[in-house]
Amino acid sequence: MLTRVLSVPLWRVAALVATAFALGAAAGALYVSGRQAGQQSAAKTVEQVADKAIAATDTSRVKQLRQQLATVQKDNANFQRQLQEAARANPAPTACRLPDGLRDDLNR
Image (cartoon, rainbow, N blue to C red; front, side, top):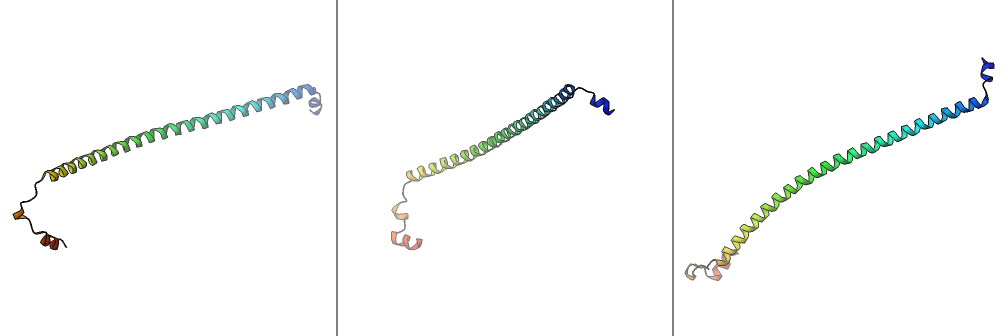
């Protein structure tokens, strides 16, 4: 058997080693490119899910802020109405008012 192995021409052994090396390098490159494609695909999926979650959160927050704005605007309108009523109110007749000194004493 040893004589048979030694009888193989050196160029054939070199060609087989070179072919094996080339196949190994090609398989490694294919594996690395597949792994990178998988990582990019996973990153893209995570990005899409995050974008959808952010959009849903933003929509919810905008709805909540609009409700708060509507409530504040309604309260503001009521307060403006009260201010206008107070501005148009007539002071009480002099006979019904307390003297200024007595009013000040009561407020202390």
